[in-house]
Image 1 (spheres, rainbow, N blue to C red):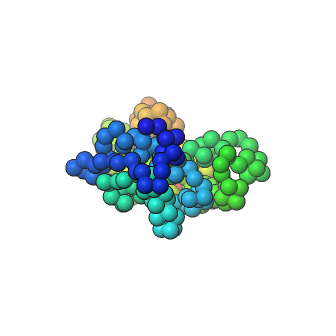
Image 2: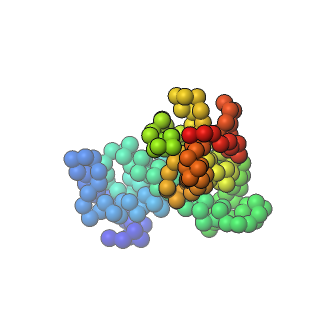
Image 3: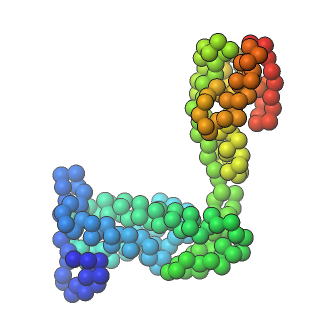
Length: 231
């Protein structure tokens, strides 16, 4: 059976989908169900795209989508499983639209006009404005940091997660130059050879050539502050 065959079922016919011991769909019809969930997830009338997250999607919409699925499938899997799988399909769809239509190097006005096929204009305009806002453009930078002295002895380590970074450029800068405060009260660069931190690596190595450690001075040090200290 193909997806198109689902639309030819009469009012009492259902495609039986079995589950395994873990409650997940199995058998030849499991893939058919997955494909249909993708169709429902892309239905802007059933599941509008202009909600911030699946969590914010009203239960009435989720239940309506579930009823639509049950009109064609006799499910052994639970309703909660179907809704969870549907939520993942919806998020994937929204992410794909953002990548294909929003991240193009065009003006905001052009993005608003470039409504994807099958998408309702008011929903698209809402989500584009959300993505374009500071809230929608929030970036995150996460990095594991090691601080070493000039002999390579580890002075401290920490994992730092930065949120609400205004631009991707700033996120990249933080990934390169993220400082931490050691137990000695000093800020120092990460010593690493990872390609993503070539700037920090270069700064530290230059200091080591002169038998120096590299620190950020002051308790309010930030990206762009630098200082040299004897090591």
